Amino acid sequence: MKYAKEISRRRTFAIISHPDAGKTTLTEKFLLFGGAIQTAGAVKSNKIKKHATSDFMEIERQRGISVATSVMTFEYKNFLINLLDTPGHKDFAEDTYRTLTAVDSVVLVVDSVNGVEEQTRRLMEVCRMRNTPVIVFINKMDRDGKNRFDLLEEIEKELKIQLHPMTWPINNGKDFKGVYNLDAKSLLLFTANTKATEEDSFIIENLNEKILDEKIGEKDAETLREDVELIDGVYGKLKTEDYLAGKTAPVFFGSAINNFGVKELLDTFIKIAPEPQDRETTKRVVDVDEDKLSGFVFKIHANLDPRHRDRIAFIRICSGRFERNTYYHHVRLNKDFRFSNPYSFLARSKDIIEDAYPGDVVGLFDTGNFKIGDTLTEGEDFYFTGIPSFSPEIFKELVNKDPMKTKQLEKGIAQLTDEGVAQLFTQFGGNKKIIGCVGELQFEVIQYRLLHEYGAACEFRVLPFYKACWLTSNDEKKLDDFLRFKQQNSARDKDEHPVYLAQSEWFLNTEITNNPDIQFQFTSEIHK
Ligand code: G4P
Image 1 (spheres, rainbow, N blue to C red):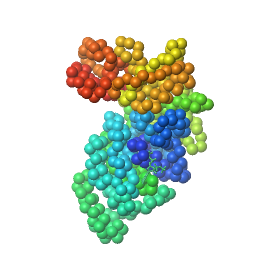
Image 2: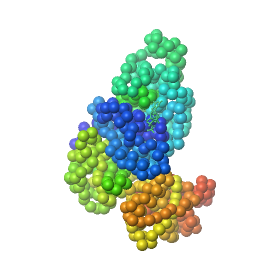
Image 3: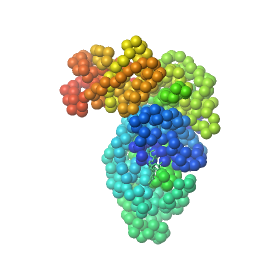
């Protein structure tokens, strides 16, 4: 319990959204509140612009910049908040999914005009898998968006989560007047401003008071009264335990660009969001307040810039205290390492940290010793569970263009897949190497890196698969027969787990129906 005080003041979370919903803007407003930046616009330059899709070097360059803001730490009302950045570009979705394994909760931004979008749906699936507590921020209320009730219904239905409005909007678009805080019973009037870091709200305990009509006009006051009565009846009071269990998501309405509704969100966040929790491992549950250090790698960032060929492994601390220049046990390699320059994302001024606590993220300069899911301890052997791999969406055969460089190619592809750039499958009963990625961009990245870092030339041949399913069965013979019979569609992943590569949903469903003794899984855990 040595570090209880440090642990209880930490909140580690991510903001997630479909590109353009307002993640960067909201991040920036949080940082302004935390005093971590002084002016609006400071975070913007780190954003991977959605338009630069075809030029991966440009995207990598921007990703390089964004390493510095991969974890943004700020203090707010004595809480130490670690905000983990997730790439907005959809081709880096795997990165985002893995980052979600390192946070204790998320804030999901939904655009009030566009409602639930593709990327939101998928990110939410990951949260649901892990029962991650979610707070929803419905953004852009200053624009003519969807009806507020329709929006709630859409989000509940599409994201399969129960919502609980914490604030309630008075109109939207040019008629947007503000929000009523259902919990604090306070009215917050909308002012379009981008500077203020304080919001003025005033308490209206009883909505029947005349002051409401004076503030927002009779017509809107009447609508608000009706809305609030309806909402109170349907939702009642938020049960924090349901939020913490990932069953109910509190909802806020606001406008990030106008810095409106952000403080309300942040104040509730520090009140209800979970501090770092105990975590499951392959051996036992690790208590967050154990004295001994443990942590795992959830992301590896390799810099493509030849002048800065550094690689940073991101470690989430799960228990104990991380100290600079102290030997820790790298479980997979069964070797002890110490780190003289652990990189802090904390810093406005200094880069090197002396120590870190559960919930913190430390960047370790790495020369190829780490892969995603690796664990550091003080000697004990275990891995953290619940770090999933998802099915890639594009599959291509890796073709060696220079037989003299086979070894380099194999080493390169092994290392790149360790970093989580792509997934590698080997065709069953053969040697064909199949690379699976979420986006086309990664193939360009792989080809470039294999050539420039390993001297191996390759090309890709498109394969007609759309999904990989990991197979398990209690009946080994049936599984073996299936793999052999479906050789064209069978492969093994890097850890030798059998995988079925489906050409289409129809094929997949047919195989699932025809093979009731085999389980088809859409995700695979790195450690079970
Ligand atoms: P993202 O990180 O989720 O991709 O979104 P980002 O914050 O970059 O916001 C996307 C666009 O939406 C930006 O405009 C931003 O200014 C705008 N935006 C964010 N919050 C609000 C809001 O509350 N109301 C309105 N009306 N707009 C909002 P952009 O034109 O794409 O970029 P920029 O030129 O402003 O940088």
